[in-house]
Image (cartoon, rainbow, N blue to C red; front, top):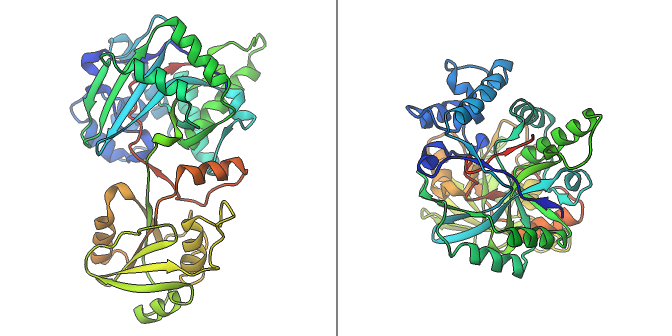
Length: 413
C-alpha cells in the first residue's frame, strides 16, 4: 500500500470540542441543526451546510454545496481550522465501553483504490457517490476521513504505542460518552518508517465509508485526467483515511424490524419458521443472540430464540455463512415476501448501538409487527468476503464507535 503524510488542517486544541462532530451520514438535517444550535464553530456548518438555510432546504441544492465551501474558508480565515506547517502522520484513539482502538491518520493513494488494493465489501449508490463528489470538488478537500482496516502489524503497533506515551494533542469525551484522543507524529524517521511499513502491507479494507472512499478516489482520478501537466505527486492523488489494525475493531449487530407478517397470524408465522429453525420461546425478558446462526425474534410481547438447522447455511461460503444471508433468504424473503432490503418500505434497520430495547420499543408502539436481532459479523468474515471479490448483503455491518469528524482535514492542493 502507498500512503503518505500530509499537512493536516485541524482545530486549535482549545476549540476541538466545539468543532468536532458526528459524520455527515449518521444524522439528518434537523438533528444536525439541533446539535449545532448556538455553535458557529461546529463542523456541521461544512458537512451539513443546509442547516444554515431555513428548515426544509434541499441538501442537494447547488447553493448548499457553495455554502459548504464558503464556511470552510470562513473557518480557516477565523483560525478555527489551521494547517500544519509540515507533512505529518497522526494517531487517533477511540474508547468505547472501556475498550480503545488506535488508528493511523494517513493519506491513502487513489490508484490503490482504483486497482482494488483497497478492497470493498459493500455496493455503492451512484447518487450518494455524486453527492460526496460535489462536496469534495467544491471544497477541494477531504473534510471527513474514511475508515480503513489492515491486517495488524506488530511494528506499527509498537510505533503507535510509543507515540501514545506522550501527551495527546486532543483528549475529550463526546456527548455520546465515547472518548477521543489524537497525537501528532512529527519525527521524520518515524514518519519515514510508517510509510515503509505500509508499503509492505498488500491490501487495506474499507470498514466504514464506502461512498466517501469512492467519491474521494473518483475526484482524485478526475483531477488527474483534467490536468495536462499531471506529474503524479499532486495532493489530489491521495485522500484522507484513518487505518486501524483488524484485531482492534468492534463490529456490532445490525438488526431488522418489519411492519407486518405478510398476512400470516403469529401462530402461522412461528410454524413456518420451525421448518428451518429450532424455535424456543424465551418469555418477556430481552433475549440476545448467543452465537453464529442463532437469532432473536420479538413478536407480540415475547422473545424467541431461533437457531438455524443444519443445511440451511454454508459455512464454507463467504456469503452463505453470514446470518444476514440466512435470515434474508429463509425469513424475510421466503416467509415475509421482502425481496429487496434496499427498497422495500416494510422493513427498517436498527444499529445495535441502540440496544435490543429499541427493537422492543418499536414493536410495542405498534409501528412494527416483529423484530429480528442478528449475531454480529466478524472482521474475519469481512476480510474473507473482500478477498474473494464478493459483496456483502445490504445492512450487514455496523462499526462503532464512528470516527469523529473535524479532528483533521486533507486539502487536495
